Image (cartoon, rainbow, N blue to C red; front, top):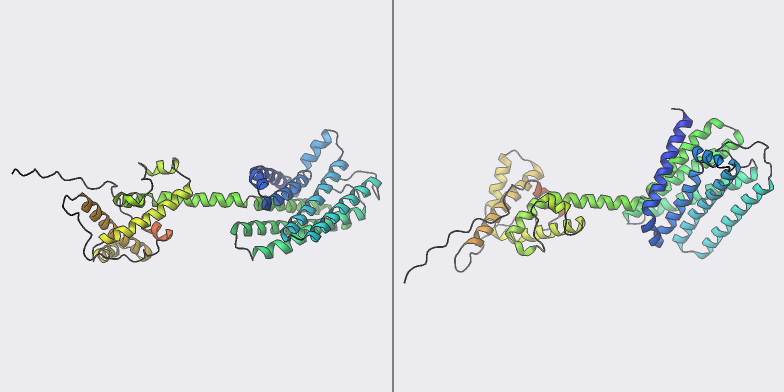
Length: 395
């Protein structure tokens, strides 16, 4: 594959990715003022990159639109994109004078480019290539390049340091991806400006790859909230799936801790949840921990030590051995609780006189509960069978 073919392939991938990201994030981004500026900025960059693709340019020329018009439109929208980057940053500082200065500079740059093109300063008789300049005016290209370099340099200077101060992980990722994209844009415009005066046409395909990859970083920065939401959903789903057997068995012994009992199967719990996966995972963690606190009253004095020795004899080591010991002791406590609940004695059976306390369950962290679930022995969620009642004595 030649450099030109690589540039075309990466360019098509970038344009498709950018438009997909814009469509996906349009509704949530436009509803939130703090995300609207980023979305509009990426939109302008996407339009400029789309008009940069040779296939798109060829399509417009087939419709009768001149290459010069397409290139001029692309350049104007590109400067608008750089100005929107500066406005996006100025809005975050909430400084009116800075915003006004950016607006004045943006209008001046756009007006200067349009005026220079209409005046035809230093234009060549033959039109440039599809990815070449709309005009060979040195002043035209200086204004265009400086506008982009200024916008991208400010983006790098502001976004990366700010990402190190904020505690919002999604914002950190979005700012850093945006800054990395701006670094690539700086490389592109520096190289493109050099190629204008040095006349190195072989450099243009590689610069096209760089600006296309810059677009992928822009799309990634826009999709950070979506990616984070999908990651959280995947984590919640994994928690629901892995914790379900332990949760089902423990709340069967301590049903008062649950708001809604488990469904018949784990697959049904996942595919037809009563609430979101995140809420279901949160419920299972809390209810499992509450059941553990109740069942500790039924742990025999030596239950944990006995289960620990069994786990050690089975060849388990480290955290897995500790989790297996906890699971064994809790299994016995669960059986004791269920058995106590089925006895027909008056008064009802009480917990053991000297219950044991299980180590490592004082905080009930999700990691501890998931480790316990991995070694939880297969049990039945049903209590032991109710014994037949004794025949009534005759008086």
